[in-house]
Amino acid sequence: MNLFDLSLKFNGFPIGKATLALNDIQQINETNFETYLNNKKQDIVSYHLKHTPFYSKLAKNASPFDWNSIPVMTKNDLQQPLNDRFSEGYNQKNVYVNKTSGSSGNPFVFAKDKFCHALTWAIIKNRFGWYGLDFNSSKQARFYGIPLDKKGYFKERFKDALSKRYRFSVFDLSDEAFHNYTRIFESKEFDYINGYTSSIVQFAKYLERQNLHLKNICPTLKACVVTSEMLFENDKALMETQFGVPVINEYGASELDIIAFQNPKKEWQVTSETLCVEILDENNNILPYGEEGRIVITSLYNKAHPFIRYDIGDIGILSKQSTLKKPILEKLIGRTNDMAILPSGKKAAGLTFYYITKSIIEDDGSVKEFIIEQHQKDTFVIKYVSSEELSTKKMKLISKEMEHYLENGLHIHLERVQQLERSKSGKLKQFSSLIPKENS
Image (cartoon, rainbow, N blue to C red; front, side, top):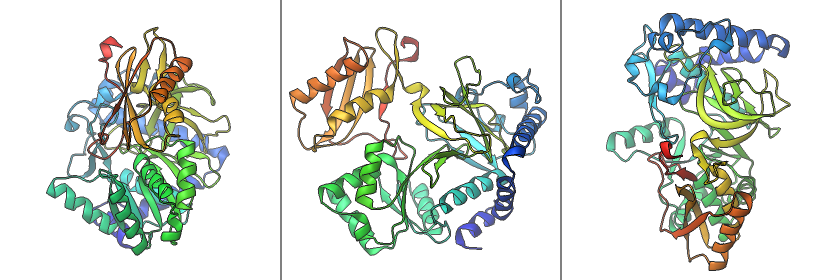
């Protein structure tokens, strides 16, 4: 057993047992997988109805044998002390405890029992293994944030050392910083890049401006895994060109698992081994494959804390080619709380605004990155980082295209800034609605 596995085992997470269990699940054939899934759904609901007062109160009319009777959990349901949500026999001393990033606007503390958390790592190791990457031996170039308090800072650095990671700051995206990054890539034998999409895209843009290709600088590089933020096809193409390796899209949630991971066939494969992923309409009806709706997820193994029919706050589509054993996430459209409500009452995904602007703004080589904020139903502010002001012609074109794709009468304001504000973890939120919910 190597250092990463040993660190999990030392902290009480049975990674060996979890790896064997995952292998057993993966051996279940398509014919028998429906039985496995139904049994696990019934088991986890029965367990929490019996052993978790918080859940039995929330799901007082639920039957483990009638899935339609199981209520949909929201993040608002979890806005209460963790100690009030534990199942019997679990407490903060015998579980894995963490906090969500808050990018949804509803951060909360959550828990996983130790076997469930070990299964999460077994899944991660399995998925990265699709590309010949091993957490025990592959060296990672990590583009993430890092806590600035001394305790949190050294804790993350220690974890980086155990996991063979070198951390690059996502809070300084200047050319000077990127120049230093290339020197580090030149001196270290990295196997892969892992981190927030927007920061890694900026690094790729720097390499393009400098006419540099990362694979030439770091020949050991095999892959780039991006997570936490939307990945657009033209950004993916840019990264693959400048890095010289495949770019792999990951979609996950810290309170759950990896939700979907791009497999070598370029399919966004959902983690069916430990999760049940549904697409629901506004009335909580299950939608057929191919239709767009809310992503609702059940964690099949977490006994410390229920995540049963949990509305993660995202909108997506499962492909018509999906099966119960191998669901494919065809499209991730964005967060439900990132919907823009227009003056006419029309709703539009916030990323629609971002995508329209992106298609225009990025042919201007001076613009590094941007975000969009909705201040009123008809008023949007585009904040951008650029070496020079956007031309009046470009500004008018953005307004014209927004009205063309959405509706007339929108007011678009562009504001050039020195840098964009990122969350404490380092994520960049591409679209934000600043309108109070009661006014939307």
